Length: 512
Image (cartoon, rainbow, N blue to C red; front, side, top):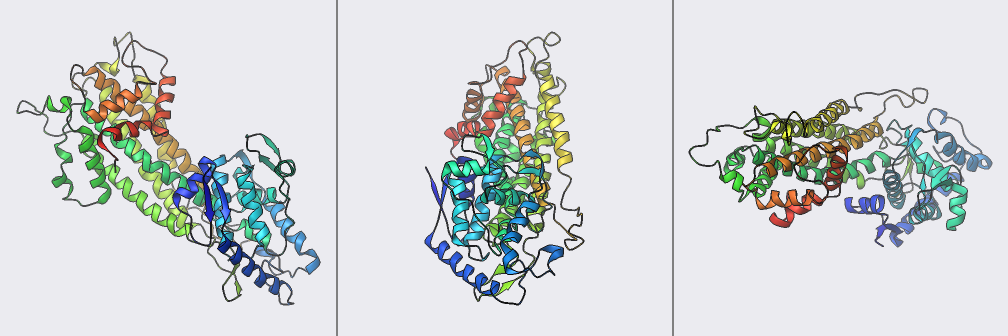
């Protein structure tokens, strides 16, 4: 099994995906353990002094003015975990919780939080044992970090609360840790706070969304190419010299993909001569690179923000190399919250354009010779009429999800935390949006594949033909009406697991 080293430097996107989604194990590097131990020595020194130090010998948030006597400090650290583990609602997905655990471990490994090495090692042991704390949908405001979600993780470290074991069974943390041979922690000064005060939940969801959207935008280009081909559109608008008149990098990449996907198409060649009266295609066909490209450029900006955050040590207070322990505001989730909201906009727009291309293939007034709704016997059969309804319903949902969460702020902690990012909420809705885009793209490809089959004996290009062939392993070709929902589900799976992109790339090489 893959093992990801966690050191004082940043993790890569692939590291996060490997641990969160594919169950890779982790190892703290010697450098990280040394940095953790050095920072802990500074905390121990401060804890022994009579002068109050925030989070070490004081209360938290609005209660920071109270000095906590030494004999109560262990209780203080465990109490913050118990009281802050106040989430509610459905369980958050396993991959999100594992990403959050890994990213908190990465911050601990920087040596800027003041925890003991054993605390970081215990968090790593939970990951390696496949123990996933139960974290709930609601509870984080995205400032002072993802407090409630991270508290549920910390609760498991002290042997309390509920977890899922490696097989997905729900059990108590005490039982799961005992079975894995992991000793529950007794937290000491600073540690409870250090386990809670991070942007790790929203960052983990951002990294996973970026990974998914990179693949989805390639699938969206495939759907657009198949729709252009199926609707007897023109590929001249995708020419490189035309695209260079507006030098956005994402647009150039998308147009290059479309040119390669449509190369050597007999369907395209069939109407390329002087007899063709198609001067301009509809915007949903002609402007695909502009929209898909703008989505790519937005994604590139989001990835830049995520890379910076992966290189961050987010805690409050932090331990500096010279031994100072200073309060700061780096836990505010605004940088992540903005791009989480930003990404929901192109997700909705790419889906909206895909739905418009799908609708054109079903309408006899605009499909250039295809049967109504691609039905076998229109009137007796409805074909893919209602599949487009499903697309439209999802697009409607995506437009609502594009409303930003980060423009709202509900003050908390007796007005000490009087402005919050709502980044966790932005991340949760982006995950739902990515799922919706996957479904919309799958229905477009499924519809375009049927339309291409109905253009026979004319054949699509080698790349799009390979996509149709891959789809046909799970979704049958044209014929009388069938139960459509299982076909949509199968197409969604093939988009989600990358099979359709792989099919196209087996002909044209890696898509941009």
